[in-house]
Image (tube, rainbow, N blue to C red; front, side, top):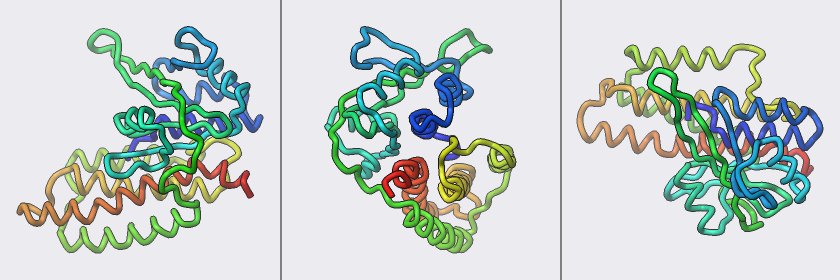
Length: 259
């Protein structure tokens, strides 16, 4: 949850490209980010993998008018609409992009290459048919903002009662990493997104930080099995709300355009 999902970058900058707000090369560069290279496999009309610029252009020619994000996990197919083959791939990756206006979706497969000490990340996006239907469990931006505020308040109360400590070098490093990402002027979303979407996504990332620190970085005062189970139970709905809010923020372009 701390790291920005690649599907979020592709959807956000893909939407900016379709809106004519950024040139193709700039959109592709923003999507790749710190990775070495992104390729797209299975693009209709192409025999093999192609670059992002060509793939996005081909999808636009096929009718794409927008991109939305799915962040599913087992038991919560958030943002998916089928068919089963696509859903299974998306669940395995825990993320996907669904094209609006054309019956296709994109699922990333992340790999590493290079010798020890010089390893780089390569991403292959698999372009697959999708069912054109309403996505599962996607809230509006307003709903997501309200849910996040309530979840953050409730989780803080519960975790304080359980004496979950956000301390130690790993937790401190996580907080420092978030602060670095939150520097003024960073591009949390691509051009064309409403300020409210930026606000919701930033809050979702802060909630994600709370979940990661409380759930993954030491036991704090919760040392018994029952206390650890209580912590997990408290964090489960918070993590779910944060994922829903991320999806709502990335999909705000389409929501705004629909108005």
